[in-house]
Length: 199
Image 1 (cartoon, helix red, strand yellow):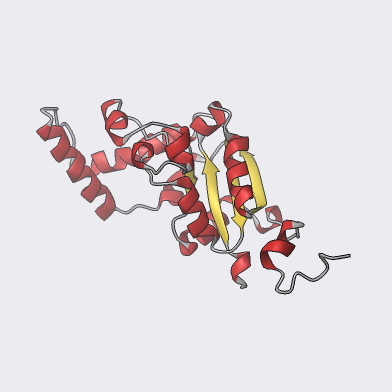
Image 2 (image 1 turned 90 degrees about the vertical axis):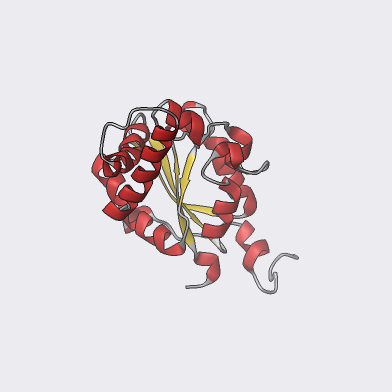
């Protein structure tokens, strides 16, 4: 596969929908030269969310142990096993991600995964750099999400590796929903000799 054909997966989450940021977010991706090759608007399947995040018991135990320790340190009650606190992370995501319809995207372009990751920013909005989507457009944090016992509202999910992008695209899209096509911008971004620009 040519590098310009790399694909990545994005979900504009319910907070992005409810705050009418879909156009702003897609515009940021398109302005870099990434091309939308697949798009869906609709409700996510709850069972697929667990497959999508793909966490195992070791991950749940590690995260849950940290949550239990943080709760103890804060003088809060620890009333369940650490693994259950870990599973609560995905339960909260399931509740959040199915609160309303979302926009799912497949984007294509050179180093699409890395470019989208850079544009989106780190998972926690308050520590994301200025200029990133999360850094500019929202202010949620792990701290307030933990206090409110909910998922972090960070506008977007994006694939973090090419392998994960391929798996997530296959989970949420059928091949018939993805399109190969050229846009005029492809010439300036990728044509080796810029053939055909001058008349």
